Every structure is written in structure tokens, then in C-alpha cells.
Length: 127
Image 1 (cartoon, rainbow, N blue to C red):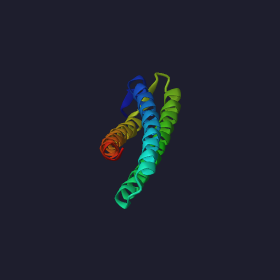
Image 2: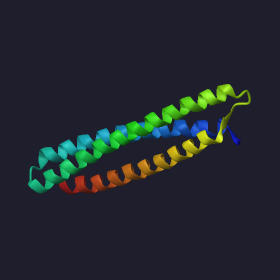
Image 3: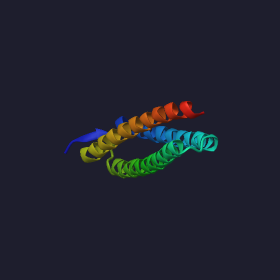
């Protein structure tokens, strides 16, 4: 059974959680800007886009919350495994899950950045 030192994965968990918190806060700021756009423009085309972005912001906040929960669960599992190992190592299956979470984080980060860019283009057009 392969074992991996917990020190190699601990920092990335913290980085991911801080980044997810930042992105969640940023989506809140973007939602505020969306409210400004909606208040200044009441045309049907604009309102359709406003509804689209409002829905996308909600979806991404839910995705962020779900991923953060999974990361915290993984932290707990890794902590229990490390306590059981006197040398501070964890099983490679937990590392595999950690790597999967890393891929999900990368995907979420990319999605939020693309959404932000798309929204900023939209908002600059209508502000």
C-alpha cells in the first residue's frame, strides 16, 4: 500500500478553500453590479441576460459550497488517517480523492473566471 506524507497535500486544501471563499465573495459583488444593470435597463433583451447571469451566479455559489464541503470532508478523513499513522502518512486512495478534488477546483476556478469575464463584458455594454 502506497503512503504519502500529509505535508504534501495540506497546503493545497487551505489554498483551495481560501480561493473558493474569494470567488464566492466575488460572485456576491458581481450580483450587486447585476442589480445595478437591471435597475438602469428594463428592456426585455437586457432582462433576459440579467436572469441568465443571476441563475449562473446561484449555480456557481452552490458549486462552490458543495466543493468546499467535500474538501473539508477530505481534510477530516486525511486527519484521521494521519493520526492513525505514527509517521504522519496517509493512504494513496485519500491522495487520489485529493487529486480529484484538485481537478474539480481547477474546473470551478476556470468556470468562475469565464463567467466573470462574460458578465463584465455584458455589464460594460449596459452600464
